[in-house]
Amino acid sequence: MANQLHYPAPQGPAGAPFADVNLKLAVLSALDEQGTIALGEPPKLAEHLLGRSFDVATEGYRLVPEVLDYLARYPLDSQKLATLETLNLDGGSTIYHHIWHFWHGEDDTFEVASLGGIENCANLRELGVAGILSPVDIGLLTPLRQLSDLYIGTGVSNIAALRDLPALASVRILNDDIYAEVMTLGHPTRQLMDELKRAGITVWVHWVSHYDQPPAFE
Image (cartoon, rainbow, N blue to C red):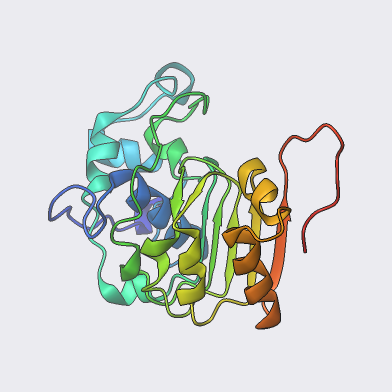
């Protein structure tokens, strides 16, 4: 119920403990969806912060800075972050409806520029990146010792760092350049993927656009 919602006082610098406010928003959204925190249904948070009713029909077509500022400084401790096991970066997070109810998704307002601080999600097991972040720097994921399932549908950098993910069980990549590399015998990326397969890791690499529509590498 709305009157049972508790919104903690904001604290610390914007984005903390992450380097990017937009990464924090994605994490907050995942925590809200799994019930670790409770933001309520839009526009309850906006009404709480503005101290008045919020008319979605007339005010939902613009970003509400008070909501963005609050969420950027929403207090997150290690206990809450430890509950997060699945994170998807795809531009479809429900938290955006609190900030900009009718956001069209056609600009970079919520684009994630850095995965810095992702190590604070120490128990993350599944990470999916289908949008809002490119490239994905695999090197920044190596502190995630529980990460087992990785899906990337954008750009990739430091791909060799896949070797340094000890719990990795499945890696799926949707990318034309990576597909071309794994289909080239002797290419370092092909050698990497063959090495992962020999280690028992499920590998799937597919093209985004290809004239001949060849099968996936797996």
